Length: 91
Image (tube, rainbow, N blue to C red):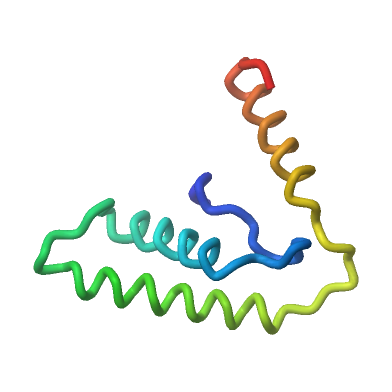
């Protein structure tokens, strides 16, 4: 999975539309191999981002869990610790 795409499910406060759209944009960029599409491809690129964001929001709305919601700060600290271990940097 692309490291820039983060888990969006089961957070308190809930995931925002902006976070869903950002993940959809990263996904479409990864799949298409383009960070910025040409004018000829711009409409298809934006449509794909919109559709991926919509289906992601639907998925997140339909998932069910009994696990307690994740804390964003705790998850961010875990990511920083993994990066420090991987790259040998200070957390």
